Image (cartoon, rainbow, N blue to C red; front, side):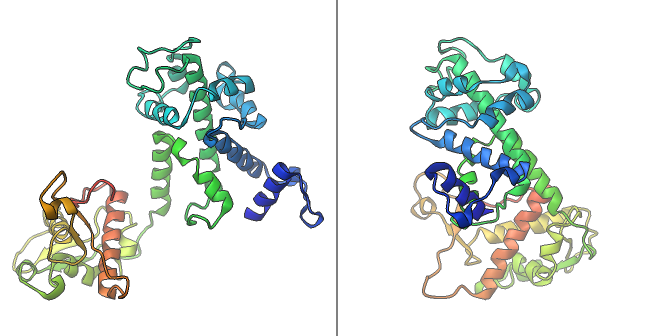
Length: 346
């Protein structure tokens, strides 16, 4: 697909068609045409000169996907485009994300927006860049962004988001437009991914035996900590259990304590594991610079440890990091809370 995309771009912008690469674009599927349209829309949105125009096919889809009363023309988009820059787009996305009607009724949401040919400083007083833009231009831009999201959502199954940057020219181009994705669409895609990756586990929920006395004792590299005990007994099953339909990864049993796991021992074991991760008992994470200097904000936050680039990270450490990732996957899948004291960027 990348090769076809690159050849198409060459034909389109350079009008240079080598005989061995010449092809009829009309022969390709409707989804591929929509993908090319999506790329053109992203080019128009991200063009800082605001000289790129939106493709005609995108304009025509406005009446189909948004309804006749909300369709827009090429002149509308060009007029609106000149009023927006990157900051104004970000503020409009923020405004749309926080509006209660955006995921309930787009028609009502649009109809509630001002439509004057002059700016509406009162309505957009919380958004400095929008307060100086004609209200009708904001309304048109809102339709453009919403239609872009509808088009992107329909094409997501064709996009391999697992590719790293520079592995695919087409995917890189599409990912450049991710800043224009609305929260409701992100949440729908996120929940769909969770549902698609959930599996029916072939094993029963295992019972993990925890030795709390041993966990509190001093040990080299924290080998007796709760997380080490859990990883030692779970490492061969965690990748499957973290995506299973079970409500929990394990049943917790403490040595010397007769207890039937009715959620409390399980939650306690999770809390102890979180405490182990963000502590000096393990070499996984270190206190953030503000914590080490006792200055500024977020002094109790922990960041990944820095290992020497000249030495390999021990396999045991890698396994624990992997296990932490599986715990995070479980928490996301089951909407559980993990008390990791990580800074916001993590």
